[in-house]
Image (tube, rainbow, N blue to C red; front, side, top):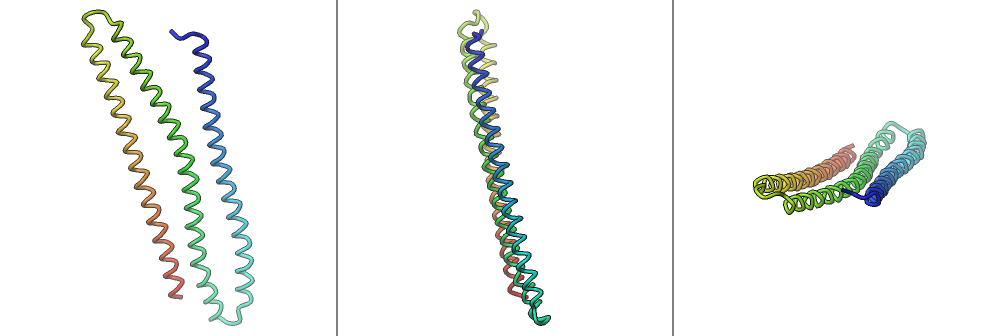
Length: 180
């Protein structure tokens, strides 16, 4: 049985963790807002510059050349924006993942201690039940570790795919710009 002091301490620890995660979430949102504001400012300035350049074109040939020269930087900026967006989401997700893993590790340790305590105080003849409980806890721990590994692998594959798509898009834009 937990004492009132232990319950208060546990509740306090939970609230501190919740506030910490909330702060991390807001930090991610702030970074996202900053990214979008900077991207919007940059796009506004660049579109004004590009409009001026297009309006000052002397003939159709120069107009086409100007239009073609605008594609590559646009693709590179879109790729950079996507990379920043991915980095923000990934960093925020990593923080939440670490907090979840730490919490699960705590719960696993508490459950193992509970099972050990129960096995020490179990009446004679209950060895089979205790063995089943220990086996179930071990299986749950193994399942959690397997899920952690699968999530990590999926995350690594997603990042590799993102990088490959970004590189391909940038290269395609460069190639298209050179052809025009």
